[in-house]
Image (cartoon, rainbow over the protein chains, first blue to last red):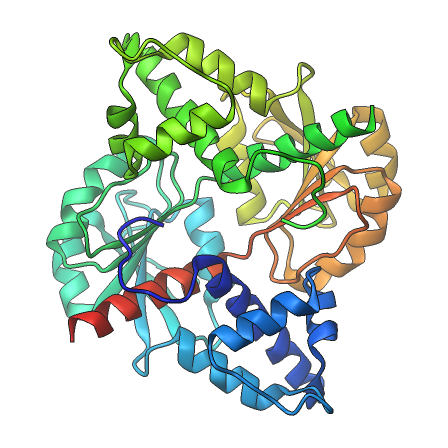
Length: 216
Length: 216
């Protein structure tokens, strides 16, 4: 991730904390009150040492005889990951990917909320899709202010992505999750996560290839 | 990534190589024949040292006076990332996300090809969506053999994901890109990349929060 300064928790740990939290929420729903580090680790295909190291890093300690208190650990991780105020997000590009992301988040009760969508397609602008109002991209800067949006999810065709860089900067957006194939560069101070699905697939394919070569 | 052994190139380097390659392909299309490491680096928001280190790691060296030969570097990275044989992939779950991924890959001329889709929705089964034939999930194991599929993209609702683990193992699938919120665990030898979009967004939100705290 580009443009990050003065943070002490590594990216990979943040990813795992996010994953632990979702698993713990599921455990809590099922009435599970305590969980051992090796059980949590097993559910994520990693080692208990890794889990304990991650939790040590955020200063969480626990009575190890009964395992971690699920409710307490959920609250602890939530405090690390989230601000007290919910953050508002917008989706730019309400094609299949934009709609998948919106649908996915709707009704999950997260402190992250998608509160608006932007598109240029006249069939979408002015509509409410999966509970989210879709505005024309020309209204982007004013709506970001009106709706107090701090994070955008860029899910439009790669060819249009570059043209969004200036509006995103001008609107005062603080974080960008970019799903297009165009790596978007922003000035220091704007958090950017470039996530091209091609990269993920090429990575899986590479490790499959290596595994096959090792077997031969 | 879980279940990886005997690989020498780190995951993050593989991700960047995939990204460099796409940028280089675009440069090549535009008639650019040579590129300096600091230019390539700038396009990805990273340092030239990082680019040079990645390329050194894969054994690529070059006449630094003119910069890297774009065509040669593309071929070099392609040989690292890809097998000689194209790998066939299937999408499981042709909702918005599955369709977004399929649409995205179609006609890109990659050596990775989506050759089939699976769903349980009767309106989709038997149809051809974006050029990809959609089969019923009950046909999964036999179609994987018939179509020589080695990688699957799991893009169905999280609640159904667990039920796929056994069919995926039995079918002899070698790599899984999992977009659901359920971390899927497979035996050693199957490459798994769990990519929950919530994790990506929580990560961006966390670093936005940290940046805000540092500014206060």
